[in-house]
Length: 206
Image (cartoon, rainbow, N blue to C red; front, side):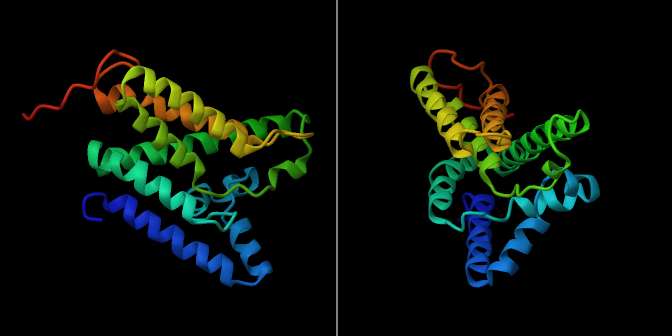
């Protein structure tokens, strides 16, 4: 835990909130999720609060798969690049993917391409930040293995969002954006361009 404090604490936070949702009456659990949703309406009123709170809930109330990803991928990333940079990767994925997807919905509502009810939708969870962190971790792998896993990760992210039927499910696009955001961190984290042959150069002391 001491070697990856941020990941460990966040995993425990998700465990606590998942237990809260499971033990709460259905209407209370729904209210908690809706109040933390990063939909257009909430982002217009209190963007900072909902962006922070939305990352603390798992709407499916299933904790174990998230915990496995956090401890097997995000914790090693934190140990490798440091807590501060690992936090920046997660936060950038969560915040930027959220804002871009919700901004597109706001534009579509303003242009009457979507009904005004689209401004109120449930959008909570840790998936954007986690996908960005997983994608960022792939930059430390050899080129071919990293490329194959990146393609699989992108497909997984799209499938997690579901195939839209009728009005678009923006989670699908948010997941894809999160993966792209994670890839954009490669030059900063590993001091090399994506897909350069070989392993990243080890950092040198001052």
